[in-house]
Length: 178
Image (cartoon, rainbow, N blue to C red):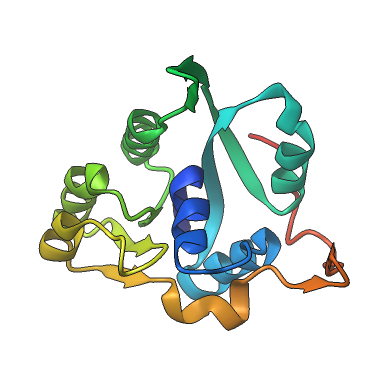
């Protein structure tokens, strides 16, 4: 069995932008997860907005399995918190014996309980937080297998050339949803 990644998409993108990155090259990030942590399947949890269909297609091409959360409009702001879906999906996959170890990609303290549960059972590969500065103090205090993406900027930041995204090579693997 290989490892699975469970990614809080909003937390990831906001986290790298908070430390000044122009964006995240998702194809290179997917390859990084595979090479560094032996991630066979990467679940990407994201709020669904119809106008973002091109983004979703791109993420699928890059090798992510998307899990959508309905987005609601509250006080003029869109809300699509995926925490509960990520935790539940991780536990279902664990109970089904689908993966050896989990890689949780988020810096949110709401994932501390899940991370500790997996860690105590030797089923946590790592919690990969988008940045150290905005990572939850609870995660920093309670989770032993914690890593940060701050030093990966040269490898994973989205590169721009003349205002356009740099062309990327073909997808890592078949990204059709399971």
